[in-house]
Amino acid sequence: MAQKRIYTHNEVIDTLVGVKGTAQREAYDLSIELFLVGQTIREIREKRNLTQEDLGNLIGVKKAQISRIENGKNLTIATILKVFKALDVDAKLHISDHSLALS
Image (cartoon, rainbow, N blue to C red; front, side):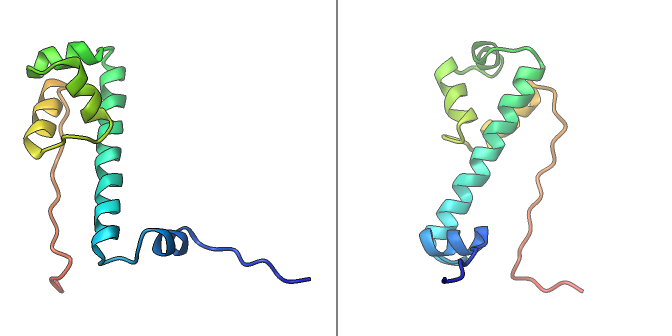
Protein backbone atom coordinates (compact mmCIF):
# COMPACT_ATOMS: atom_id res chain seq x y z
CA MET A 1 0.00 0.00 0.00
CA ALA A 2 1.35 3.39 -0.98
CA GLN A 3 2.09 5.85 1.79
CA LYS A 4 -0.03 9.00 1.72
CA ARG A 5 1.79 12.31 1.71
CA ILE A 6 0.55 15.14 3.86
CA TYR A 7 1.02 18.61 2.39
CA THR A 8 1.54 21.74 4.45
CA HIS A 9 -0.66 24.79 3.98
CA ASN A 10 2.24 26.66 2.36
CA GLU A 11 2.90 23.81 -0.08
CA VAL A 12 -0.74 23.83 -1.16
CA ILE A 13 -0.78 27.63 -1.62
CA ASP A 14 2.55 27.52 -3.49
CA THR A 15 1.10 24.92 -5.85
CA LEU A 16 -2.35 26.40 -6.37
CA VAL A 17 -1.60 30.14 -6.23
CA GLY A 18 2.14 30.52 -6.79
CA VAL A 19 5.29 30.82 -4.76
CA LYS A 20 6.11 33.94 -2.74
CA GLY A 21 7.46 36.69 -4.95
CA THR A 22 5.20 35.97 -7.92
CA ALA A 23 2.53 38.48 -8.92
CA GLN A 24 -0.24 35.93 -8.34
CA ARG A 25 0.96 35.15 -4.81
CA GLU A 26 1.38 38.82 -3.92
CA ALA A 27 -2.18 39.54 -5.07
CA TYR A 28 -3.49 36.55 -3.11
CA ASP A 29 -1.63 37.55 0.06
CA LEU A 30 -2.90 41.14 -0.23
CA SER A 31 -6.49 39.98 -0.69
CA ILE A 32 -6.21 37.83 2.46
CA GLU A 33 -4.76 40.74 4.46
CA LEU A 34 -7.51 43.11 3.29
CA PHE A 35 -10.16 40.51 4.10
CA LEU A 36 -8.76 40.20 7.64
CA VAL A 37 -8.82 43.99 8.10
CA GLY A 38 -12.46 43.98 6.97
CA GLN A 39 -13.32 41.18 9.38
CA THR A 40 -11.69 43.10 12.22
CA ILE A 41 -13.74 46.18 11.36
CA ARG A 42 -16.93 44.06 11.36
CA GLU A 43 -16.09 42.54 14.75
CA ILE A 44 -15.39 45.92 16.33
CA ARG A 45 -18.55 47.44 14.80
CA GLU A 46 -20.65 44.59 16.17
CA LYS A 47 -19.04 44.90 19.64
CA ARG A 48 -20.01 48.59 19.59
CA ASN A 49 -23.61 47.52 18.74
CA LEU A 50 -23.56 49.52 15.51
CA THR A 51 -25.27 48.54 12.29
CA GLN A 52 -23.54 48.96 8.95
CA GLU A 53 -25.85 51.91 8.37
CA ASP A 54 -24.82 53.47 11.70
CA LEU A 55 -21.13 53.19 10.84
CA GLY A 56 -21.78 54.51 7.36
CA ASN A 57 -23.46 57.57 8.83
CA LEU A 58 -20.47 58.16 11.12
CA ILE A 59 -18.01 58.26 8.21
CA GLY A 60 -20.31 59.64 5.52
CA VAL A 61 -20.88 56.61 3.29
CA LYS A 62 -23.80 54.33 2.54
CA LYS A 63 -24.43 50.93 4.14
CA ALA A 64 -23.35 49.17 0.93
CA GLN A 65 -19.90 50.77 1.19
CA ILE A 66 -19.52 49.47 4.76
CA SER A 67 -20.43 46.00 3.49
CA ARG A 68 -17.69 46.24 0.85
CA ILE A 69 -15.20 47.48 3.45
CA GLU A 70 -16.03 44.58 5.76
CA ASN A 71 -15.47 42.19 2.89
CA GLY A 72 -12.02 43.63 2.20
CA LYS A 73 -13.06 45.55 -0.91
CA ASN A 74 -12.45 49.23 -1.67
CA LEU A 75 -10.10 49.56 1.30
CA THR A 76 -7.70 52.45 1.35
CA ILE A 77 -5.59 53.69 4.22
CA ALA A 78 -7.75 56.82 4.38
CA THR A 79 -10.92 54.73 4.66
CA ILE A 80 -9.43 52.45 7.30
CA LEU A 81 -8.34 55.48 9.35
CA LYS A 82 -11.81 57.04 9.09
CA VAL A 83 -13.48 53.82 10.20
CA PHE A 84 -11.11 53.29 13.12
CA LYS A 85 -11.55 56.90 14.23
CA ALA A 86 -15.34 56.55 14.07
CA LEU A 87 -15.13 53.32 16.07
CA ASP A 88 -12.76 54.98 18.57
CA VAL A 89 -10.07 52.38 17.90
CA ASP A 90 -6.43 53.03 18.68
CA ALA A 91 -4.66 51.44 15.70
CA LYS A 92 -1.08 51.64 14.60
CA LEU A 93 0.23 51.19 11.08
CA HIS A 94 3.37 49.09 10.84
CA ILE A 95 5.42 49.52 7.70
CA SER A 96 8.41 47.27 7.12
CA ASP A 97 10.89 46.95 4.30
CA HIS A 98 11.74 43.26 4.27
CA SER A 99 14.61 43.86 1.85
CA LEU A 100 16.59 45.80 4.45
CA ALA A 101 18.93 43.83 6.65
CA LEU A 102 18.89 45.41 10.07
CA SER A 103 21.26 44.34 12.81
